[in-house]
Length: 533
Image (cartoon, rainbow, N blue to C red; front, side, top):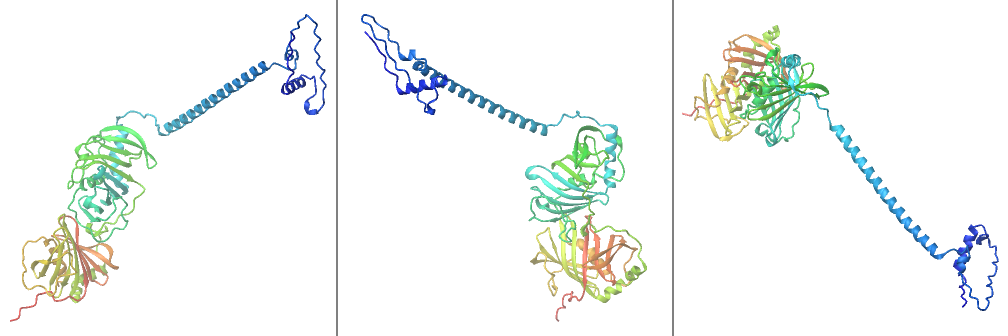
């Protein structure tokens, strides 16, 4: 039986033609060059002979094999998928490596920035370091002044003090702030023995430097003495002579940089510089370890201590911020250079009593910081003609009730005026006719000052040796401050160039200064009217 294969389809012919073209047998189809294929003629079959039928595709070398082509196409697709998967894995691997490298670089930079090599371990103080500690306090004294930032306590009890200290004159001027400031919030000035404050409850808790020129009024002696240990520590950082080298025993801890200068951190555990005997003992008095940050010249930059009842305390010094400080009048005002009176000053001083009698009288204003529990303010009149003074006085720390005060000759009487409170403009006129009593009273601290103002008009003049302390101004008027030492203490007379007394000052038992300001002029009748008969 004779078998025959079907003729190739058009698609197979097209592929075969393309293969023949690639093999160089025929020109490409795009050239439209027809190629006549020879007709395939099957040989005639002879009877009785069976011929094997071979597929044309097997005989035609250009036709190819369909199964083989499909196998090759599948293999190519599978290879492409494998290659794409490998490329994707390679890209993911490279991305992970790059991310790891970036993170490693960031961590390395952060570590290098924050890393510091381990310094030498703590050791005992050397002789040179003990010598610097011994010279530290006298160095502070010779450099006069420095800026201060004191932090005392922690958290809600923290108190911040910002300002300056003048070790040579023994004066600190501070702004008191922080959440633990309490009633002391505001301004403060202090000497080694006296503290006066100017409370400002409305001030923001954020600490700030005080105004360079302090306010003239509002200063008082505080009842709260919690700043005393801090002030004792500040003033104890200076002395007018070096300490003994052998008293400083401790250890060297570290080396740092403060204010752009290399400093050594020295911890001293022996009793350090003593505080004023009027103040609470400091950490250095009790032997508690204190750390000092000292540069190579023995200049102090920071102190850390632990104070009983307060906690950790840090005192940071700014050596570049050192203005001249002005003490307030409650601390005696600006220091001067006492000297003898000139001829013109002696003449004005000699004619002072007659000048006061000619003026007749004056309106007076009193400011007397008598004690931590007594701060007196008063207004009224004074008559040199009759030798009488009539005042209304209030105590800032009491219930605010006003006290009427009358000086007449050597007799001093008072009335507690329950109908008036606070600092009134002046006592009532005419003065009361009854209710006056003598004897001890909480306002008696101002009696010596009023009596001295009345005595200044006596014909005998002011007794005692007078010397000029300084020149000053009061209300725009130039004055000479003349001090006279008496048995009760010094008295200062502020005399203008016309020979008129403008102010009288005297120290109180608490160490502060009281002022009586005078404005010459007419005064009302200061004695009660006589009863009609």
